[in-house]
Image 1: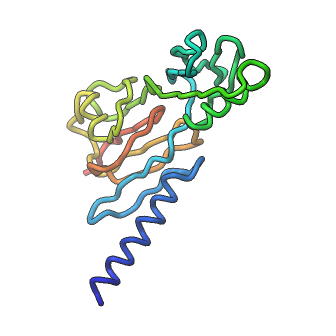
Image 2: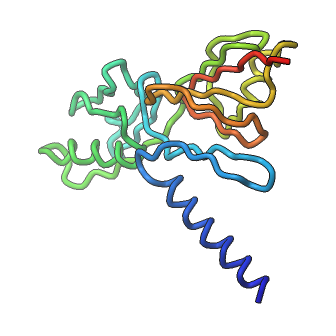
Length: 193
């Protein structure tokens, strides 16, 4: 009976966490996993400097690679500018399909994917602070390694992360599971003895 209750509680927590991670516009959540705290990154939303590939099946002239501009839009052949900032890939596909249905193609089949994510930024007590390209499943420790590692004064117990669309930064325990999203600004603070 005790094993069943443990399994049931684990299942319920998994469902709750899956709902938090998949909710559009959700804010990052920190959860305990064993003795570590893991930062869950919400579903990715496009922003300026993201590069996407759009494929319209059967329409080679409408297929290509496009950069999300500072205005948050991509410029497509035939239909012009389409708002991309703040949309998920699925929502962008639907927005393009809706625009194409407005007198151009009766049943467009649109596929889109992110080719290059916007960069992340790291500053503070790392050897080479700056802007770096984002890679999938990036963690804070991977980001620190990319920036040349910690300085001798670095606080290796906590990290401050500001999301691209957030007003301020949040503090997280610096663990192997703390995730970074494209556009995040990571700050490694100085330790105090």
